[in-house]
Image 1: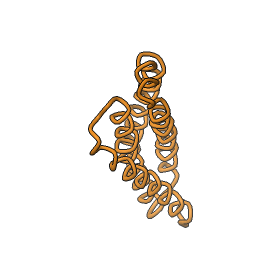
Image 2: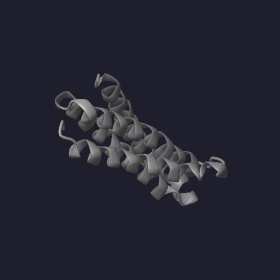
Image 3: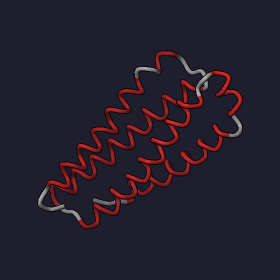
Length: 129
């Protein structure tokens, strides 16, 4: 497995996580406070950054893993990437007044993030990990 796409996703999601966190804390601070959405924005940024670091770790892990373990790590990276986009993306959108139909997307993103961690457990349980 080529770790390059995972490293690229980690870098882009890490960069945008820091940028969006700072944007929410400074430029949008009063707006988010007024709407009562500061916590949602902070949660989105925190989960985005934590899982970007997870993507970095998974890219490093794929270099030493093989066979089924490597495939499960790749699945984890895919689930985390999709999960970040759905979970954090929907929270960011809701925080700035996005349409209410976005709300149900948040738990789907959370399920993707959890599925990624399940893939890590399966990969770690593999003989080739």
